[in-house]
Image (cartoon, rainbow, N blue to C red; front, side, top):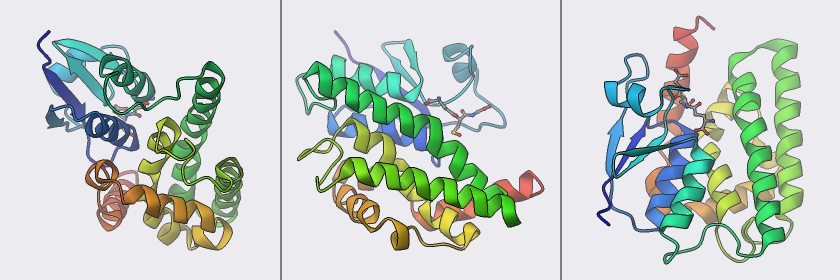
Length: 218
Ligand code: GS8
């Protein structure tokens, strides 16, 4: 089977970064298309008519949508390469549980951190730190959420590291003070080529968040 792979993405998207990391871990060659989300391409609207969101993986002209579903698809299609999900059903269920937790919480809480002020922002920061502490507890003394190997939960969570500087600067707090092990883990992940190449520079994301704030009049 020919493998024509196109990724519709947007560079600061933590959801897109997950897919970039997965494709890199599997050594899949693909065409990267950065979308303008203010003026979406015909291809994006055709490939994701339901949500009209990136990322979309177009594999041999067929779309797969939603980042975590895309990552699982990649793991199944390129099953001969570096495994992302654990093979044991119980461990797979646990990995999906934490990926789902990250998916439900990080983006929205992170957004509250950079988009609010005063007491509302203080509450958002507390919430954000509480979530990181839960994740830190789950990590324990393991090098990765996946144990000895970088895997599905690591790949789901690490994209937010590129947003940490924006959260910290706009919220005036330091993640490392409350969650040092999360920062150690993030730095360990950044040593992987797949991660280092997929994540944009933290300063660039910060500039992007400033633009977003201006755009939304915050
Ligand atoms: C979220 C994708 C998403 O929010 C996933 O893939 O996991 N649950 C989905 N994509 C955003 C860009 S990142 O903030 C997007 O495409 N937004 C365009 C829009 O809402 O119009």
